[in-house]
Length: 366
Ligand SMILES: Nc1ncnc2c1ncn2[C@@H]1O[C@H](COP(=O)(O)OP(=O)(O)O)[C@@H](O)[C@H]1O
Ligand SMILES: [Mg+2]
Image (cartoon, rainbow, N blue to C red; front, side):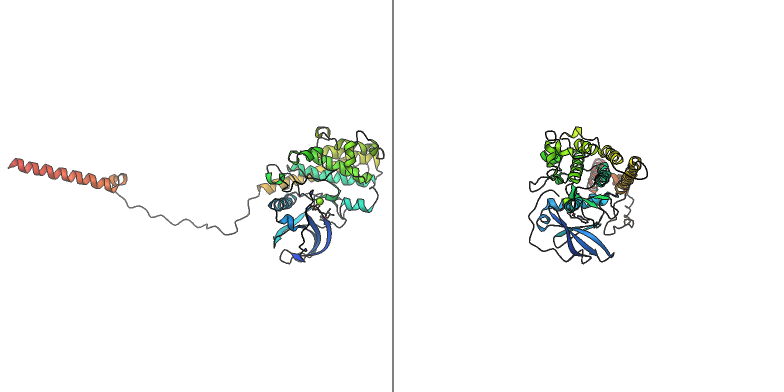
C-alpha cells in the first residue's frame, strides 16, 4: 500500500484464526500491514498471512480497504494473480491468508542482484500485463504496480499482489485515504494519479508496469523518467525495443500510452522474440494465446461469481404454509355492504315509521 502509517506497539500474536494459523517468520512489511509466514494447522500447509497494523485496524477506512483487497483478489481467479484463501479478525486484529511465494518479490530480487537479465525482465513484465488485462476486464484499476507488489512463484512466473488501493467503480470509501497520504508510490505512480487518485483510468497501471520494467533493467529509481525527454541518456544503456516500451508506457499524457494492457503485452513479447535467444520458434503467438485463455477463464469465473445465488441465510426461514385463515361467516347481502350501526339505524327508522303509521290508522278508525 502506498502511505506510511505509524506502527503500533502491540506485539504480533503467536496464532490467529482461533489457533488455526501459527505465525513464524516475518516475510515483508508494507505501508499498513506486515506479512508473516504461517502454518495452517487444519490443511497442514504453509501460507502467507497479512496482518493489518493495529493503528490501521482502528480506522474504518483502512479496515474497509483491507476487506475489499481480500474480496477483489478472491474473485480474480488467474494464474498471475496472488491467491487468497481466508480472511478473518480476532481481538481487533484483521488478517488475510494468501498462498505463500517463497521466492519473494521483484524488489527483493533487485536488492539481491544486479539489474535483471532482459529476458527475465520481459517475461515478468508480460506476466504482470497478463494479470493486469484480467484486472481491467473486471472493471478495476490496481493503482500500485511496482516491484514490491510483484511476487515470484516457484514456477518462475510472476504474480501480481497487494490490491490494497485498488479502484472499484462506484466505491466512494476507497477513494478516501483517511490520512491525506498519497495513493500510490512515487516514481511508479502515473502523474494523473498524483493529482487526483480518483480519476485514474486503466492506463495509470500501464505507467506502473513501464516504470517497473525500467527499474528491473537499470536498477534505477523510475522517478528519473519524469525528465526523460530532457535526459534521454537514462534509456541509452537499454536495448532499443525495451527503451521504446518504457518510453511509451510512461508518457505523462495517458492518451499517448498504449491503448490497453494487451497492446503493451504484444509489444513486450515481440521485444522478447527480437532480443532473447530461445528455442522453439517465436513466442508471440503462443504467449498471446495463453494471455487470452487466462483472460477468458477469469471472465467466466467472474460471471459465474456474480450470477451465483446468494448464500443461504444463517437461520432457517420458516417454509411451512401460513396457518389457514378463518372463513368469514356468510351474511346477508346488505350486511356485507353496511356497518352494524348503519343497519340498526335503518331498522329503527323503519320500525318507528311503521308504529307511527299503525297508531295514526287506529286513531283515524275511531
Ligand atoms: N504471499 C506472499 N508470499 C511471500 N511474501 C509475501 C507475500 N505477500 C507479501 N509478501 C512480502 O511482503 C511485502 C509486503 O506485502 P504487501 O502485500 O505488498 O503489503 P502492503 O500492502 O503493506 O504493501 C511484499 O513486498 C513481499 O516482500
Ligand atoms: Mg505492497
